[in-house]
Length: 126
Image 1 (tube, rainbow, N blue to C red):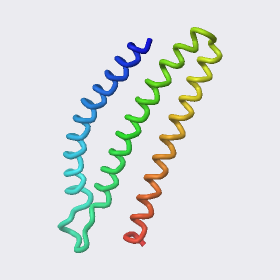
Image 2: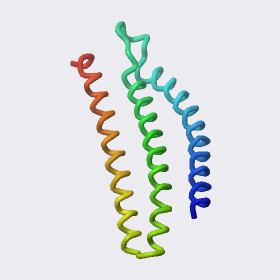
Image 3: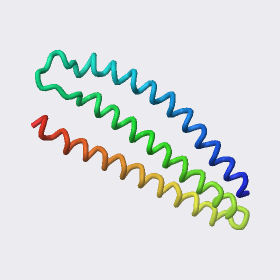
Image 4: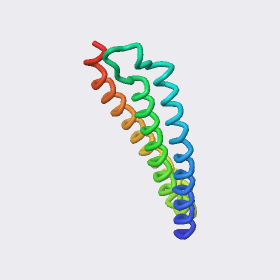
C-alpha cells in the first residue's frame, strides 16, 4: 500500500507541474491582455496595475491551494484505505477530518491573501 501511495503522490506532483506550466503561460498572456484592456497605463499619470496584480496574486494563490489540496488528499487516501480495511467508521472519520483540514486551510489562506490585498490597496483607493 505504501508503494502505491508513493506512486500516486509522485504522479500527482508530475501532473501538477505539467498543469501549472501551462497555467503559468496562460496567466502571462492574460496579464498582458488585462494591462492593455483594463489597467491602461497610457491613460493614467500615477499608474499601478491593480487589476493585473490582483489577478496574478489570485492565480498564484489558486496554484498554491491546488498543491496543498493534492498533498493532503494523497496523504489522507492511504490512511483512509488502510483504516477502511479494519473498520469503515474509522476510515470515514479520517476521510472526513482530512476534508476538514483541507477546507479550513484553503479558506483561511484565501481570506488571508484577500485581507492583505485589501489592506495594500486601501491607501491607493481611498
